[in-house]
Length: 279
Image (cartoon, rainbow, N blue to C red; front, top):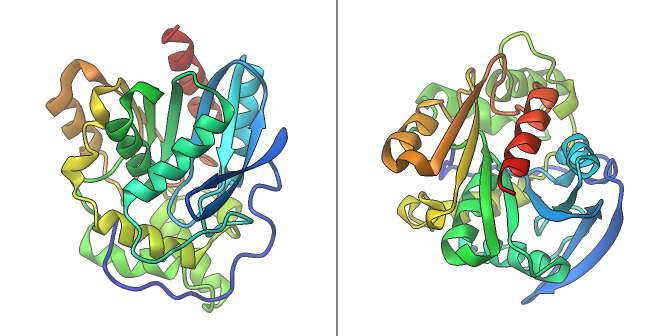
C-alpha cells in the first residue's frame, strides 16, 4: 500500500493518540529519538505496531484483551506521533525497527511476540530479520508487500490523509479504502498523522521487500481481511506458498484494511490463542 506520491500535511488529528490505552506510561531513547510507550499487564511481552500514520490508540481494545489473558501488552507511539519525537527525514525501516528494539530492551530481555498492523507488519518483519533472537513470533494484521492496491484506489487512499478535505469527503475515502463495504468507518475519523505517514512511506520505499519479507525465519501468523483492497489477500497466500510451515493464515470475513475496529473479537481470540500456543 505504499506510494511515492506526497501526502498533504494538513493539521494533525484532534485528540491525543494513545489516550484510550491504560497501563503505565514510559519514555525511552533510541538514538536521537525519544519514544513514549505504555505497558499494560504482566507476563510474556507482546508489542503492537500500528498502521501507516496512525498511533497506538488503535490497539487499545486488543491490548486490554491480551493483558487480561496473561500477557504484557507494550504499545509504543511511532516517532512523529503523539509525544514521540525524532528525526523524520531519510528514514528507513531499519530506523523504525531500531525504535521498537529500544522499547523492547527497556521492558524485557525476553523475546517478544510482535504484532504489526498494515504498515506495522513491515516494521515487525524488519525487526525480526535484523534481530531474530528478540522476536518469538510475528503476527501480521493486513499483511502486504508483494501485491499492491489497484491503481484506481491510490487517489482514494491518499485522500484519507488529507485533513484539509471536508469531513464527509475524507470519511467517504476512509470507508472505501480501509473498511469492508457497509462497515462503520467512524472509529477511524480521527487518529491520522500525515507527517508521520509521509516519513513512513519513504522508509518503506527505501527498504527492499526482500530484506523484511521472510521475518528472519520466525513463526508468522497472518490475519488477513477478505475485503482488504489496500493489502489484497493474495499477499498472505503468496507468503504461505513461499514459506510453508513457517506461516499460518486466517482470513477474516467482513474486514478490510482497518480490521481492528471491524473484527475486534475475532482478532483478539486469534491473537491470544496463537500466543498461548507458543508456550
